[in-house]
Image 1 (cartoon, rainbow, N blue to C red):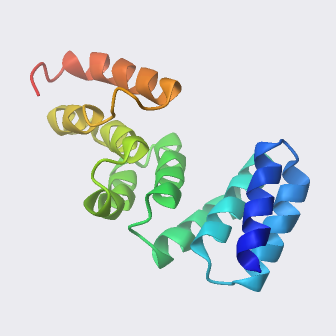
Image 2 (cartoon, rainbow, N blue to C red; image 1 turned 180 degrees about the vertical axis):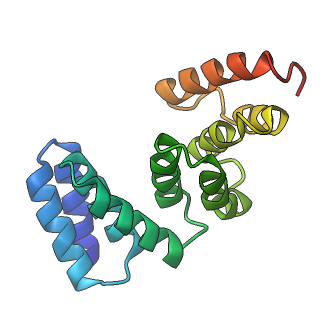
Amino acid sequence: MGTDLYRDGMARLEAGDVKEGRRLLEEALHASPGDVKAMHGLALALDLLGERTRALELLEFAHARAPSEPEPACDLAMSLLERGEDARAEQVLAPGLAAHPGHPRANLYMGMALAKTDPVRARTHVAKVPRDADAELRREAEALDQVLAEHAPSV
C-alpha cells in the first residue's frame, strides 16, 4: 500500500500539487515507516513548502538508513554544500558513489564538494557526468569543469 501512496505522492509533486503530494507521502511513510523512498519524497515536498529544517532531518535519517542510495545522498549533499559544509557533503556522497560510480548527479555534487580542496579529483568526478545527462546537469558540469581547469589543468 505504501508503494502506491509513494507513487501517487510523487506524481502529485511533479504535477505541482505539493500539499497533496506531501499528504500522500506522509501516508506512505506512515504505512511503511522505514521506507527510504517515502522519506526522501516527503523531504522533497517539505523543502518545496519551505520546511527546510524538517526536510533536512528526513534526508539525514534516509541517508543513515541507506547510505549507498544516491538520490537522498545527493539532496542531502546539496543542502550541505549550500551551507558550506563541503567536507560533510563529500562524506555523504562517498557510499553512494562506491555503489553507483556512474551516477551523474552524485559525481557532479562530489566535484562541487571537492572543488576547493582537491580540484584534480573534482575534475575526475565532473568528467563522469555523461554527455547524454539532463541538459541542466550537463551545463552545470561543464561550467564547474571550466572553473576547475584554471586550478587543475589536466585530469
